[in-house]
Image (cartoon, rainbow, N blue to C red):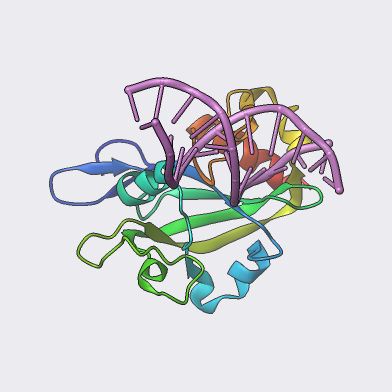
Length: 172
DNA sequence: GCCAACGTTGGC
DNA sequence: GCCAACGTTGGC
């Protein structure tokens, strides 16, 4: 394949570079162990109700991309492991369900407002990486997660940030 | 439980 | 379009 080895052919004319993302989840609701035990170790990532994150899910995040699986509101908050996107963005069905906590009365199947992707479990880190340790890694100084007041639940991650986190997480 | 930071809502 | 009020996030 032409281009970098970190690339997927996505159609006849273009090669889509693999990109990296960080997905936040509260482990008491859905942890990396839940993902590892899910059918096909795969789940849809529903319930994101923030426009910036929605735009990423709908437009930017593609099958083959890498996902850093982050446990927020945990004690301590950690990067728990890695996953991979297995399906491009598609409408989050819960927006149409009046009984769902994620229901959006203004969304219609013709005009969906909220999107989700599918992800599959890749690995659980030998040692979960605490947020406090991430803050000590100079390669991560500009990481979105570490910026003041950063709340985005789906965030872009650079290739160098990905590399630094994977290297540290695999180290016992 | 506290609270800073952020996103959304709605009156004007 | 402004912006105050409110609700939520998420680390500590």
